[in-house]
Structure formats: structure tokens, C-alpha cells
Image: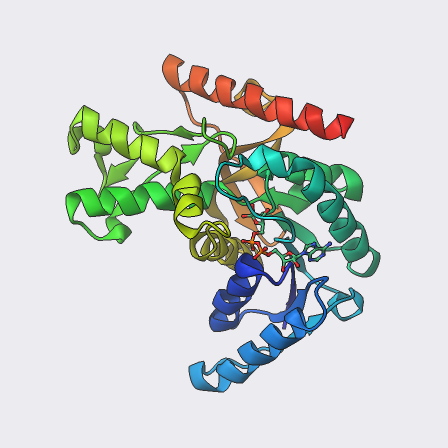
Length: 308
Ligand code: APR
């Protein structure tokens, strides 16, 4: 059975383990700094598995010993946003946490593929790759599946159709200037622009961009975790099952879309080796401009990372 470690047994990490345990694709290790929390959540989850009929092993730990030999390490450890905070406000605190998680994971799982969730996402994925001296195939950031899922949910509500019929593609940095590509988004093959009046579509795009903040302002004491963790589970599944699945995710770019030396949300293909391919869409001028604007913001936070 493959092994997946989830670092951070908080809201997102524990819920990721929950989805993954149900998929029955890997033994799971939860790691957290808080004494008893990863152990308690792992035990509770393990005790749920006879009910749902899954034979994976789930353990929790405060150290990385039990994570040895992991195929995938998912990093969710970090501080979440509070109302009024941007993702970038988390940079200094979370970079120390991500650095430590990568170093300690690699010491016992030298072949692991890393999936990063901790915010601010694009600089944290960049940091993980640099700290671990990893090839880009082995570091992927989760943002695009979540942002696209939010847009898909809003479109399905708007039109009263199944979420299964809705395909949306949100690219760019995981910030408020992410780029929902309405031209590529569709319902059962019909372009969104033909189905939803322009002003309603603009409202959906805006709600998507602010989707994380909408949840933060409702919860007040934390950020979204069901949808982010479902996205992480889908990425783990795509890799372990070698699906060659194309999803939007943050990848290290080496010239694709005219961008290099940054993590940025683009369509990628995921398989057993991790990042198999970056897919390049042909973009129109306004789409390219929006992506460049988003890339400029991501570069600023990567620069801040180098200074901190
Ligand atoms: N090693 C392991 N776990 C850590 C460390 C560390 N060095 N530092 C903090 N943690 C743990 C915390 O103890 C906590 O249990 O990370 C967990 C984070 O969980 P939550 O506070 O519930 O936060 P969550 O909502 O899961 O968000 C985590 O994901 O979406 C992003 O912006 C969000 O960066 C944040 C991260």
C-alpha cells in the first residue's frame, strides 16, 4: 500500500486524511506539532474505517519517524487567515513551518512528491522546491482545483445543473487577482458566455476570486477546509493511480506562458511521477494580460520570501 503523509492535522489536514481514507488508496500518517492532536484524530479516523469499509492504516505523530518512506507528503501545516488578512500576511510565519516540514520529510522520505497547500500558496510551493532542492516534477501546489471548484459550484447553482456538467478553469496566482478563464469554461460543452448574461457571469467571477475570503468572514476563526482538502485528495489520487489527469494547479514554470522561475496556477497533467506536463492554452490578449498581472503579484510575494 502506498504511504501518504499529511503535515498539519488541523482543519484541512485532518479532512484531507478523511477523504483519502475513504478512497482506500494509501496508508496515512498525520503529523502535527500539537501533542495528542494528530494521534487523537488518526485514532478517531481509524475507528471510523470499519464503518465505511476501508482497510488503510492511519497513525498520528509529533515527529517524522512514522512518515519514513512516504510516496507523497501533503503540507497543510501553518497558520490560517483571520478576517481582514490576505494570504500574503501569512508569509513569514508559514515559511518557517513549510521549510521545516520539507526538510524533516525529505530526511526520511527522499523520494516523496510534495503537494503544498499552506498559504500564501505560490511562494510556499517555491520555497518547498528550493529548500528541498527538488525537481519541479515533485512539487505541486494546490489552488486551481479549489478555485475552479468554487466557480463550478456557483455556475451549477446559477443554472440549476449538475456540478458534473460544469467545467471551469481558474488559472494564475492563488490570490484575489486569480484568472477565471470564462472562454474555456463550459456546461456540457456549451461555453459559459452563451449561457449566462455578462453581468451575472462577472458576478460569478468576482465571487470566485473572493471565495476564500467569503468563507473566512463567515467562519471568523479559520479558513475553508472541506473544498481545499477535497482538492488535495483528488491530486493524491491522480498521482497514486497514475491517472494522467489534467487539472489546474500551481507548477514551477520554466518559460510556459512566457513565465519562468515562479510557481503559478496553470493546467497540469498529474501522474505517478507527479507533474508530468504543463498544458499551454492559446490565450487571447485580455487573458494573457490578466495572467501577467497575476504573475506580477506572485513575483512580489516570492521576492518578499527571499528577503524574509
Ligand atoms: N509542523 C506541523 N504542524 C504544524 C506546524 C509545524 N511546524 N505548525 C503548525 N502546525 C499545525 C497546527 O498545529 C494546526 O493543527 O498546522 C495545523 C493547521 O491547521 P488549522 O489551524 O486548522 O489551519 P487550516 O485551516 O488547516 O489551514 C492550514 O492551509 O488553507 C491554508 O491558509 C491556510 O496556511 C493555512 C493552511
